[in-house]
Each structure stands twice: as C-alpha cells, then as structure tokens.
Length: 82
Image (tube, rainbow, N blue to C red):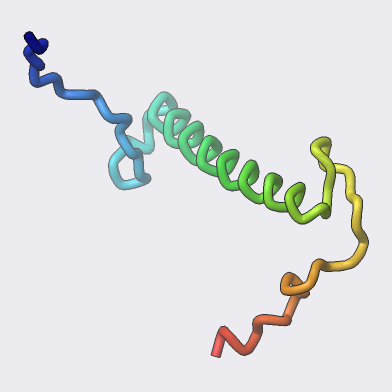
C-alpha cells in the first residue's frame, strides 16, 4: 500500500525588493542586503568557474593567462550590439 501524501505548503523564501520592505527597518534592510549579496556570490562563483574552465585563472584565482581566449576578446562581439 502506498503512503498517503499530505498537502504541505512549502515556505518558499520570500524575494525581497526595495518596494516590499520597510526601508526604515534596519532588520529588513539587512535582510535585503543579505539577499543581494547572496545573489552576487552566485554570479561570482559562476564567473570564476568559467574562468577556471577556460584556463584563465586557477582554483585560487591566480592569473594563468595574460591574453584573451579566442571568442572572448573584448570588442570582438560589438557587431552583435547593433
């Protein structure tokens, strides 16, 4: 016999915005700042992983290459902007 599943509501983390908080509350501002910094950390981790994958930096972030990899040269995709 299978288990009966209870309908449980999961408490999803609330996405805070500057409009959804009381900006006079230090606690709410701190929560928003923590959320923003956590998202920034995710972006940084992804960019660091990509730089390691491309052999630009090592795991500790030390620079391994001094030239840009093919296809990642600044300005090489400017035509895509127009």
